[in-house]
Length: 142
Image (cartoon, rainbow, N blue to C red; front, side):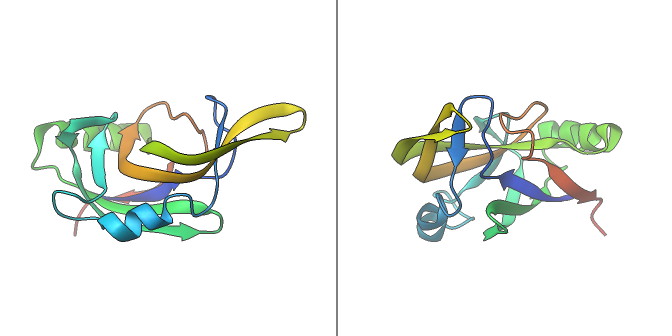
């Protein structure tokens, strides 16, 4: 199954974080998307459950855009592909280590602004920390 959408956006999330545009650019460039050291596509932040392969991960319109192949040859990925179909899409969440951050205030609320992070994985999730991090398209492989 081909999936795509916003892995991360610079809007406040429920945990009080704002991931700034480009925060993961150096990490993605250094690691790449394939092989043992690449940024992974996983299920619910479980690095023991790889779900397929990320084919594109790039900064677009202030957010981090993802395109990936969910491998239905993997049992748990097959289950999640079925969940994508029945729920008319699901959501994404990023797993990362903070390298540089600051406290910012928006409308009187303080947030942790993630300036630079080490991106480890993008997860398929039901309930994302950021409601704008969601699939916008999914289709069965041709």
